[in-house]
Image 1 (spheres, rainbow, N blue to C red):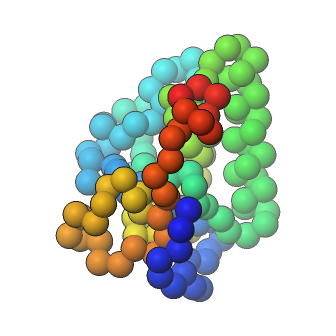
Image 2: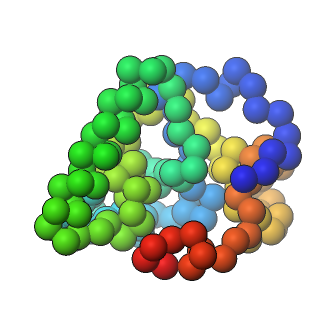
Length: 142
């Protein structure tokens, strides 16, 4: 991750999440939620307002603890039955945020992906971005 611009108190809230920079213009039924009912991260086609990026979220201690505890428990349940959600922990984060709406929503400028370049004309200022990496080197299941 790399900082490009100021991130300040405008990013604070009880439960904060950022809209994914690759999917913010997609219709809901095309969000890459986990669609297999066998996973605890399953989100039905008619649910969800946004698809969230897992590399930045936050909030008040009790809210973030509840989120991370729930996601960890769901990851463990899936693992116990031999299931891995389509986007691993990001799928579980999205399931949680579908059920527990964030109190603060950050635009994709807070989680831009350098692989997208700067072609999106609606993004005027990139504040924080993920750097290009070889995912096979950092993921068990690329």
